[in-house]
Amino acid sequence: MPEVLKAPLVLEFPFTRSLSPVQSAFLTGLRERVVLGVKTTDGRTLVPPVEYDPVTAEEIRDLVEVAPTGTVTTWAWNHAPRRGQPLGTPFAWALVRLDGADTALLHALDAPGPDAVRTGMRVRVRWAEERTGAITDIACFEPYDGDDPAEPAGRGGEVGNFEDMVTGIVAPARLDYTYSPGRAQSAYINALSEHRNVGERCPSCRKVYVPPRGACPTCGVATLEQVEVGPHGTVTTFCIVNIKAKNLDIEVPYVYAHIALDGADLALHGRIGGIPYDQVRMGLRVEPVWTEGGRFPDHYRPTGEADADYDTYRELL
Image (cartoon, rainbow, N blue to C red):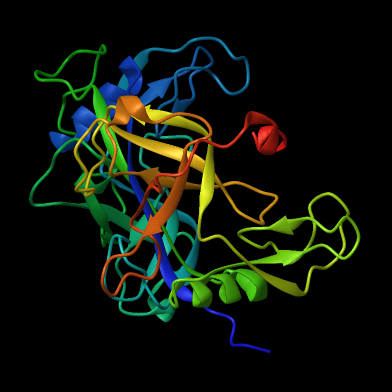
């Protein structure tokens, strides 16, 4: 059996969200080295603050300041910090109930080792040198020798007590993983590097799928028989792209199409070139164009043949 391919893959995008008035005040407060909670009608103080009481579901807006010191309620040791975590050396994830609060805040606790951490230990906020209005404005917690709460900064009160309020945040989302296309698509990719298109035929319905999936999506049986298809094909349907994609050096407008390669029973997609975008049409006969060293067709261009009859590809739309 040929080697199954695998490669590292990173999926990354910035997630932008707006903030409610309570969240806006909380993050703006962190920028000013102030920790705010919200007080419920029965007198509880919730940190981090929320917009609705988790017990009664009523809206709550009464912001109050709490101390930057507190007590560890529970913790777990992180012996191998990952990319993007608060500290680059081993640390504890800890739930800290700040003095004046009735709930605990999750953050990093900087300690020399797990033996130096315990439930009930006193800690205080270590502020980041540069603060932007994010939870990372608290760089971490650190051990605190005093039993008495530290004095708050005296900036509590109603929402909007600060100037230049933080109204939105950008949270980067990233997933690092190893992707393997499997046996069937590994063979397909290897064939593409030789400028060939290879699909697999279902032993039951006899349809040829390109790219192959390793199993027939209709019959559910394994597909092992390889079939070379193309290189010519037919445009079954298409769209005109008018928005330039980041890091893609293609001038807009251009056409992206579904292309049924000769001998295939499934259309694949590819860019159409070598013809004005407004002359691309269903039934257009095309062939692949390979760049030097390319592992897949750069685009498809017209072959000069007569357009295919609609009945020959209507089942592939």
